[in-house]
Image (cartoon, rainbow, N blue to C red):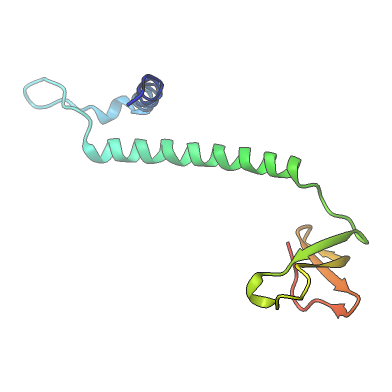
Length: 121
């Protein structure tokens, strides 16, 4: 394990320990405090993991929106044709025009041969 990985692991563990509520530590009949149960630790680590995944999803969405701009009506797009669906002499892509936008993420496309049956994203 590298030194940076160790630091990151230690930071995550300290953040998780901060999130454990004091009520989870109970007192035993002889007056000593019991440690937090394994189920409580799993719950806290799960919540921490979920929060981390949500944060990563937001970051991915922002970078994707910067990288791929919103398409507009009438804009030309290229559609790649998979190798399985084409012969050796067929073109690798076709040009289509956006004819309609539905729900701000689905596009109806048309080529010189007609409209495509499916909506594209």
